[in-house]
Length: 185
Ligand SMILES: [Mg+2]
Ligand SMILES: [Zn+2]
Image 1 (cartoon, protein in one colour):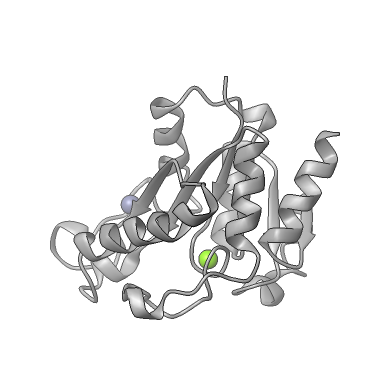
Image 2: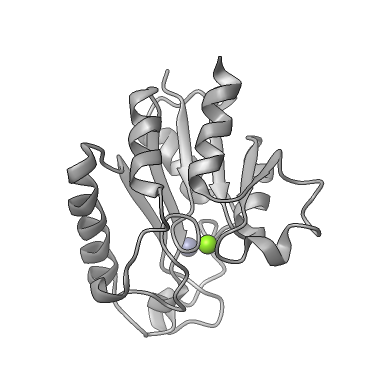
């Protein structure tokens, strides 16, 4: 069985930009590539789970998102680490066409996490979710795994209200990883 880290993308891995899809606007939050490399070294599967309602709203397409995700892995290549899989939800209840949907994959629903568990043999008891927003923390809760809130992105503004729902609140992803790895020892 594999232990996994479910990672939110915007505001957790990269600086929050509203409806990000352009490669030029992508920037890692400082320390993230190194922290991901440490997790990989410790044997974790790295899985991004991201709500991308911008697809449903028609701001960008699925291929824009896929391009950005391959760019992220290209950047991480320098650290000898890769995201093992990117899961994204393209839906939104107020979206357009086929993307207009009350789906089961949009966080706080657990569809993406469940799909990951069919794709990989995941040990939930040894897994964590790291995110910066309510949907992330509640998805982890709904899925029955512990979560870490990061104070980057929207984290600071939801820290108080979610106090009972996350296991730990970290300054950023790098500190969250430090905490996880220290806990293992
Ligand atoms: Mg986020
Ligand atoms: Zn969805």
